[in-house]
Image (cartoon, rainbow, N blue to C red):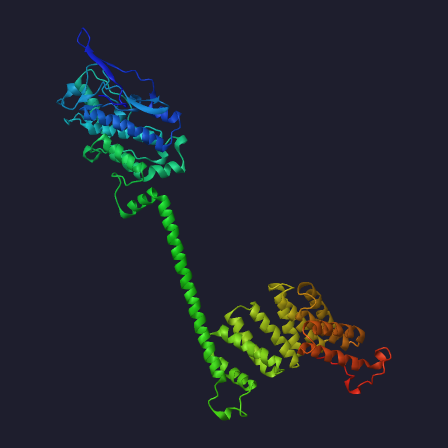
Length: 551
């Protein structure tokens, strides 16, 4: 035999008294299990070292030699060029495959070591007339593999057998056979020595390595690996993340192995697949949204077409249909025309109510707004921004209808919710503050209204700026309250500032500028010459009463 993993035999002779002997290479090394522990080899490193042992045993088998006593103490590890190299020693029990099996060929004479029970195959220990072949060494390699992986010997007897007579040896081996053939160790986490126990070890021992060890340790040698190279090949497959022959094959098992072999490619492909799925989902969501918006647009189109369609000329009060008539017609039909889309129905109703409100038709605006609030509370949320905006406008409408108590209650409820949900500086909150001031101006008097106007104005100046339209509107409301309190000088100052800013920013002919001019003129008329530093302009007696309705 000539193999790097087998200690060399230099000579073989007999002593003068006829006792045979052979001269072997002296190997300076340590037992394979001790070496692995001392150098803290990883699982992969242990398996790679064990593959070299299997290759050495396979070489011996190819030379028609069966070792018959493979165990850690007969596998020494020495370092060659800084790398561990196993050396199989002690072929003292080796049996030539060509020899006929009998007691004399299996056991040496008295005092010779004939094997180590813990590492013997069942057929080697049984002496039942079975021939010993290469699969016996495969079994022993399985026991060594077990010990390398879990750091503890397999749960089998470890006592060596010595005998001076074949019958006695046969008796002991029969007992050994009973013990060995009824033991079938598995690679369990709790079998490992404490230093080996970890979640990582548990994952590694579960599955392929367990199957490989069990196949090597099969009691029936016909189910073992036929050769040491077969055992080594399965371990190499495990290290390459390929399906091992000891493991039951299945589609899922092969798929997992493929994924482990091609981690990067599978990760890239998986990421691409996820992107495609995400893109498909996004497209589906977008298509659904587009479809929903298209259907909504169709409903709006159909509703608007119905608004402008006059089937009977008698429906019009003149030669042409007025915008007011179109609005009235739409208000009557909106309950049925958009009943399938409550959210859109509420938006359209709110727009109509705002239009009626702007035209001063509060009696028409109020029922629409009440319906809007009802739909939004049911279909959206009671504290949704749109719902609160509808409640705010409804409070103002109810106030202009003369129901001050109901208006104040609704206005304060809305303002409290907006401060909590939207924040005290939100534009919608500030609008509701101004509207509460409008309600209070007619109910509790100018001082209470002035407080709300000033608070809203201070926040708007800071957040929106002094020239923002909402800021100027609050300023006009404050001037109205001051006029109602007969504080004409303060009211005139506010009105003049509004007028000057609007004339500069909007132009002298803008409706808002003209409205501010009229309010200032009304105040000047109410003041009269005596209130304006002795001026000689005549006082309009018909304009002396303060106007409490907000401008």
